[in-house]
Structures are given as structure tokens and as C-alpha cells.
Image (cartoon, rainbow, N blue to C red; front, side, top):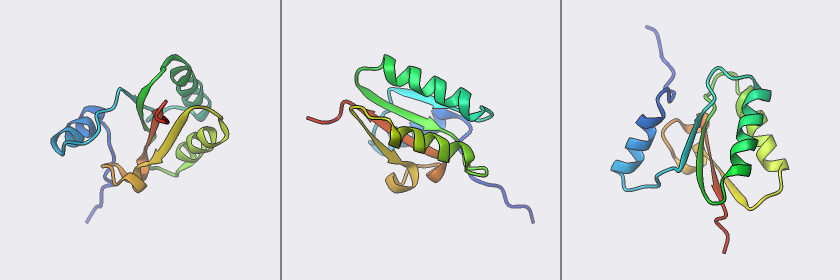
Length: 107
């Protein structure tokens, strides 16, 4: 019997699931499946610089965890006015395959 990993391949699937539950709608969804870490970090940094407020859903996938680890290290080292929430801690569909960044959420 083959077991398939439950991953998020379509960002709209996750957004629709959260919307049905009355949860958070994400302003930006970035899917980094198939990206190299350097490319993903460059695009994520550009998005962080361009947005003034809102939320970013970062879909990095599960896999071997290399991209997830690099993205989360990048976000933890970077100083800014944002908070980071891991998918597994927020009980989001996709679990440890997603990370959410909330910009300018502090009062």
C-alpha cells in the first residue's frame, strides 16, 4: 500500500479551507515548490520590502525540510516589524509545510 504525503500544491485550496472556517485570509500567497533556497529567499525578501502591512502565506513544502529550515532561519535572523507563525503551531492545513508572516501586526 502506497502512502502519499499530504501537502499543499494549490494555494487556493488552503485559502478556501481557511475561509470556510471563518479564519484568516492571506494577502499574499507564495508557493516555493521546486525553488532553490537562494531564489526563494530573494523573492521572499522582495515581498517583505514591498508590503507595508498584511499577511504572507509561505508554502515551502515538507520534503527533506531544507527549504523550510532556510526560510525560517532567514525570518528569525531578519529584524523587522513582523511576526512569524509556523504552520504546525497554527494548526494550518499543510502543517510544517507552510509558514505565515504577519507584517505590522504590533500596536
